[in-house]
Length: 176
Image (tube, rainbow, N blue to C red):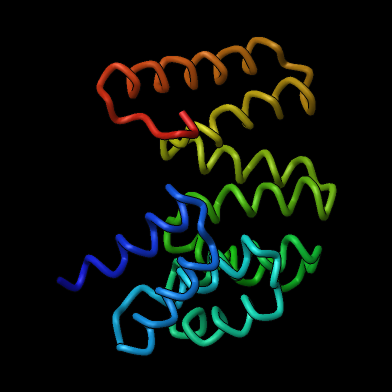
């Protein structure tokens, strides 16, 4: 079963928090030619804070336009405070509508470039896609940047309503 390899790695990584085992299986399955393992290897190495190894694992697949690889690679560069490379990979992934990358572009603007207006624009893009994090952060930017409590409350309310609807429908996640 070609999907079982991904499940094994994901269970060790996310459920059991056994990163060494997740990495071991991801490398084994990658060597066997199973797809989706490069980004898993890079993600585990990122979580282990082995940034140089993560970049080596992710760069080849990011250069082949793998959205997950581009997104994780952007996170690695973000953690290293490398604005140029973080923006390069996050913007490529965001251009393919990857919501996590859109949020990362907002964080790059906010925390690395101190450009609040651009961060707000990115949060608006994320919120327009119905992303809870983008909606909540957009509310915060209205409150902090514009001192517009009415719009801040609107977006925080939208976050609450959508999150509540997801919980009621059973489609919520840890971030909800």
